[in-house]
Amino acid sequence: MSIACRNNTRLPLLGALSALLFTAACATQPGAVGSSATLTALTEPPARHQGYNWFFDQDEGEFQLFYGMAESDDIPLGMTCSSGSGHITISTPSEDNHARSLTLTSGGQMATYPARATEAQVFDGYNIVSQTTPADPVMQTFGQNGWMAVAGKDGWMSLVGDGSARELARRFMAGCKR
Image 1 (cartoon, one colour):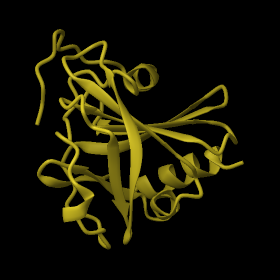
Image 2 (cartoon, one colour; image 1 turned 45 degrees about the vertical axis):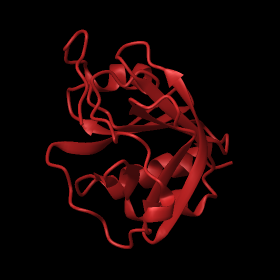
Image 3 (cartoon, helix red, strand yellow; image 1 turned 135 degrees about the vertical axis):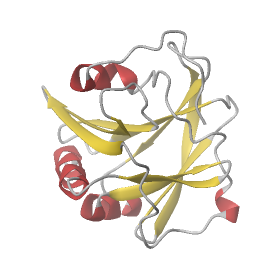
Image 4 (cartoon, one colour; image 1 turned 120 degrees about the vertical axis):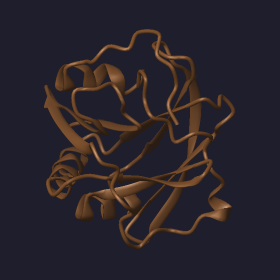
C-alpha cells in the first residue's frame, strides 16, 4: 500500500536516509500492524520485492540500515543505532495512529516490540517507532541471514534484499553491539 505524497520528489539515497528514518516520505506501508497471534515465525525468506533492497550508511558513529527502493523515498523500514550503544531504533510508516507494537520475524525467530506512533512530518500518516538490542534473537538471526519480514494487516511483508544483504546486516549489527 502506498500513500499519496505532498511532494513526489526523488531524494539522493545516502543523504536522505537519516532524515527518512522518522519521516519515510511516500513510503510503501506495511499497513496496520498485524496481530502476532495469527502469524507464525518464518523459517525461510519470503519472496523478494523487485527493486527493493537493504542500504547501509555509517556517518560519525551513527549506523543506519534501511529497506527500500534505490534513489527513492520509498522506505518501508529503517533501523539506526549509535556506535556501540547496544540500542537499535526501528521505524516503519503506517496510517494507524493506534499501533502500539511492531512484530518482526527472521529465520524462525519472531518478536513483538512495544512501539509508539508519532505523527509524520512529511506525509499524511504516522511512524511506528520501537526499540530493541543487538542481543534480541530476531536481530541476531537477521545479522546472520540478512532478511526479515514485518507484520502488516495482510500478513508478513517481505524485507529481502539482494546478495549483499547478509553483509550489510552483519555490518550494521556489529556496529551497534557494545
